[in-house]
Amino acid sequence: MRKFEIIEAYKDKYINIPRRATKHSAGYDIETAEDITIAPGQIVKVPTGLKVTMPEDEALFVYPRSSLGIKLNLIMSNAVGVVDSDYYNNKDNEGHLLIPILNFGKEVVHLKKGDRIAQGIFHKFYTTDDDVVAGERLGGFGSSGK
Image (cartoon, rainbow, N blue to C red):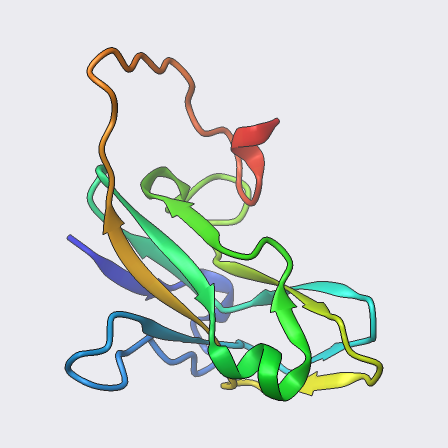
C-alpha cells in the first residue's frame, strides 16, 4: 500500500493530503504545514505534517517544484530527498516529512501554510544479487548516515 497520512502532532491543523494536479502528473504536490520565514542564506526544515507508507521496494523521491527557484529564490538544500519505506513511523519523529529549504536570494521569504513547495514521486528500486544489509533504521531525518 502507498499512502500519505497526517502525523499525530498535526491531526487538528487541517493538513491537505498530497494530490496530483492532473491525471498525467507524476508528482504529488506537497504543501507547507505552517507559515515559515526563511532569511537569506538560511536553511529551514519546512514541516509538512505528513508521513508516507509504501512497499519495501519503493522510495518516495521529493523534488522541488519548479516555481520555488524561479519565483522565490529557494531551493531544496539536498537537491532531491529520498524517503525510504522504513522512515515511516520511526521513533524519532513518526516519519514526519521535512523539506530542507535554502534561501539563496537577498530578501526574506515568507511561505504560507498550504504553499506547494515540493512534489513527491514514488519509484521502485532494485538491489544487486549479492546485496547484504544488516542495518536497521534507528531514527528519523538523516539517521541512516550516522
